[in-house]
Length: 293
Image 1 (cartoon, helix red, strand yellow):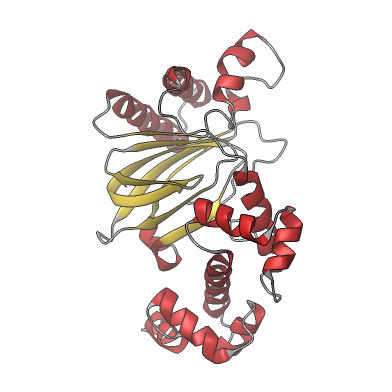
Image 2: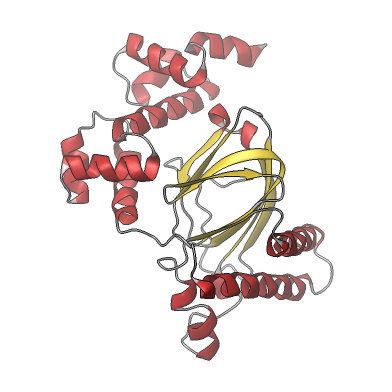
């Protein structure tokens, strides 16, 4: 399953001493709160393809409707989020790893040529390949094998996983080298990350647009434009969503509705109930009854 940090972002961070930084697994979009995983980023890269159903996957503000067999590469540091569609089903396979597994960070011919500027997160933040693309099919087969090996761990599984990931990387490098139709990272992404980190640290308190814009060193209007472009919503729509999700976590842990609301940054009970119903389709108390049923 996806790893979520204390701010609510998915963030797979391997410890410095991790000798084999590879993570694999199948996730289901319907298992997340409100059938969606929120905006996050990782220090490793991620390979994702849809196993069943479909999801809407947004990477650095670019939206993709992904159906069975579609593949997405998400580079280190690229922001991404996803949600279910009206279809309601959305299972997907994830393989994540640190590129240092394949190539030491020390400079050298291989590092410079195949893991350097061409594959850098600024020049190659993402890649989408539809299911009918033979390269997507090849990557899917390799990812399936990586997942099997990482689960069963037969003799020499580490070497076999690295060999499969090298093949995947060769395909990705060939696509990155074409540099046609690939979406480069924009400067506003770092600005939005800083805003999200600040919000994640302070969502329990009263937040103003002035505070957030000062933290990001931009005007309020520019912050709103960047937020809308990257997140497809306003800063306060995001803050409200985050607070609702945090309150749900606290309710699930057994806190009362009132305490959960106050601890999540809501200081008006009627407003909290209104926003909860808009987000979840039911009131907090109706949500609790459903959970107990």
